[in-house]
Image 1 (spheres, helix red, strand yellow):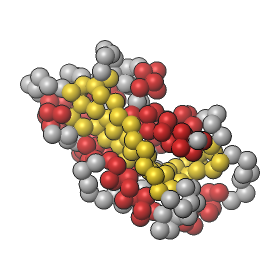
Image 2 (tube, helix red, strand yellow):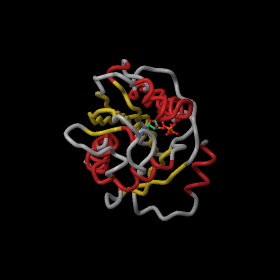
Image 3 (tube, rainbow, N blue to C red):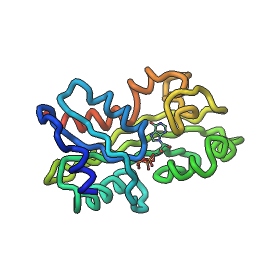
Length: 197
Ligand code: ITT
């Protein structure tokens, strides 16, 4: 991992604050990169997976990942752990969101939700930031509900099922809404506030 960071950073100008974003998910990278644009941060994508611990919350997963990765990577980097928590399923799929989507897909979630009147859910994003010395975690959440069927084609993951509270469209039907309200946007705002203080 440390070797890859060194390779990725070789020969780049250093006027902007350079922060690596270690994630296997290109959608996460492009969303966060867009949000950081214009704030003097050069986000460099390091597209790779890293082992995640089992825990109940995204904050705990992000903290443990920061701790583990910072044993070998000493340059500033962020990681993000996120997930969809459905109230009537006791928070499932939660921290297992990526795995569950791969295994059962959006249809699997809709099957689990069949006949349920309480469709409330929320997304959580926990951004872990290692500044070269210390670890920090910033979180954001957005409340909403699970649609009755798959709606929209934009975005990624559970976007076609998630209707933010107070609106009628899913995130996948209205990306402007997602850019304005998302859990990730709120976590990135906290991160930027810290970095730019
Ligand atoms: P990395 O761990 O490599 O960053 P990942 O996709 O495996 O990538 P997570 O373990 O944090 O990331 O899983 C989060 C999953 O939650 C993600 O794969 C989506 O299925 C879902 N998710 C998170 N944020 C989302 C969003 O903004 N819109 C839709 N689904 C989202």
